[in-house]
Amino acid sequence: MLFETHSVVSLNTFDHFESAELIKNPVDGFSAGLVDDDNIYQWEVVVIGPQDTLYEGGFFKAILTFPRDYPLKPPKMKFATEIWHPNVAKNGEVCISILHEPGEDKYGYEKPEERWLPIHTVETIMISVISMLADPNVDSPANVDAAKEWREDPTGIFKKKVARCVRKSQDTAFD
Image (cartoon, rainbow, N blue to C red):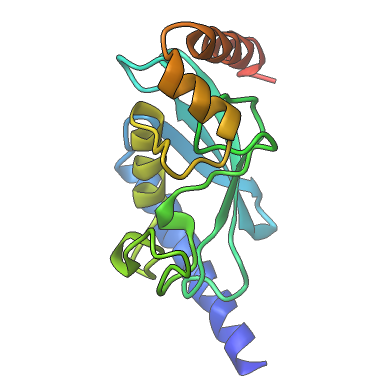
């Protein structure tokens, strides 16, 4: 029980600090805030498609869900806006190293320092996600079909699917 209380205090402190910091010093490429002021465990983020990528011009909404034992464990990120990307599962779940549980990778693919560390912030997570959009990791895909299309024909069917997602995200950006 004491640990749970401590975790809530940590997240509550984090919430106020992160919110204030992001308002005071906004970071290009995304916006973030609480989904509901009464729930510090869920944040809505909007990722703005990075310039000079296939995602440019898109507005991709996602939810960051923080666990009760944050910051010891990473949040989960799931796009609510449809997005076609090798490192985003078809259900919208983001699969990147920074959001994987801390410690050794049982498959030996990731180094421990590439995985979650309690020093990460919403800003570092979002910078990693924006970087992922520009440079997918097709060697460890969450969406095998998207990875295959990226490898075999990045300017063909893959590009068309991403363009459709970008257009759809623009149409629903202010819903």
